[in-house]
Length: 503
Image 1: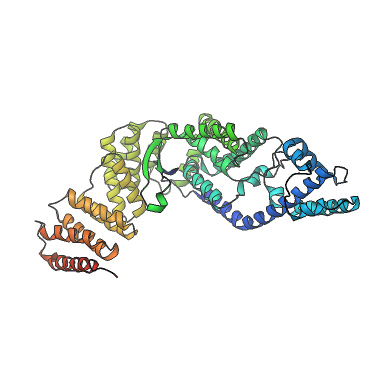
Image 2: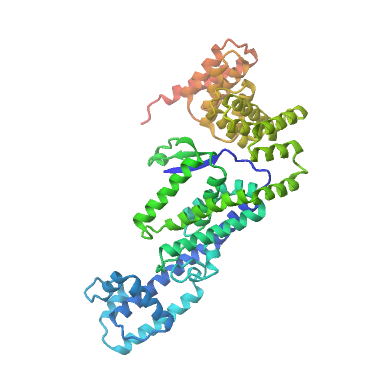
């Protein structure tokens, strides 16, 4: 299973309030409707099946127009099902079906149909799916909007919201808070329309934000085709053995078209039988790619960019704003010159280094990008922005970086320890010690790794090795001698205790 983790531009200029709002709104609607939808769907399914059984066995029965219309659609749209229900020798579906076969009075059959028709109408009036989900055979105008905010389960919701976050916040940062939400809603509506074209007679309710999110993915491809996306490949036994997933990065122009081709393949192979609206995904993606390119080519994006810059100018340095605009136009050398000017004024500008590393990435100057990422990581560590510091460190390693400055690396290890990712913290302490064997941070890293293995990870054997390495270090450690000796004693005691057989 492939899961997208992040892409190379995970920082925005403003809070992505629209994207966050969409995620919150979808989640709230799900919490308010999910239980009711499941209950109603179960009741409605039973009533509809009973109506079809009775109408198939006794077509002479009278029904209200809406029930008659439902029966005719099933009869014409699903002839195999209809012929199966007409067969008196088919298997019994439920106790009601068994009971109806023992009756032979027409009045009883009509009474049953009247009761079912009444239930059918009552469920239709109260059903969330009938009122707000998208039915390809009978699409209501409001459902082109509302169906995008309904979800069938937690995995359905979480998957859509994760993709919405990854693709949405960067487009909101690029297009602003007017174009972006309008695009999102139109993409969702168009996706539903394509689904109706591909399933014209279907009465299966369609719901979920995946069509709109696919539109964002298409726009992401049109707008940022070269941006690399970090993916995790998780195999079947990952959760059993707690193995680390394999990670890799690939540009959007490779990954996203591949995803689109898979949707076309599954849509062609299974149609609507898989329970996934594949053609809605295809329609949303194509809409997003075409409209995303059009927004940029028409100048709307440039106008939105000016508006954004005006609104953030009170917190954004003019040189940053100018460099950002130059990057948008592909004027990378001019942008780099402005950013370097800013660094003369403010050598520790985190925003400047964020943009500089992006410029070097676009220019394919890998050594310069590594140097910028190294500096950026140090500034983030100093600012105690641990999540971004850790991510910048990952970017640094992915760009070919081997080691941070010893003091920065040590502080990053301590912050990593605070995140409770203790195994990774130990690995990084070990890497630091191996990279700087003659510097004091190496000694401190060995002591810290020993402490974690002994006190937190219950691994006295590995702890002993770290303490032994610290004890044998040529780095002067008189101030730490007592700590090292105590660690050695506790590790040896723990090892001897664990060696006692247990009955």
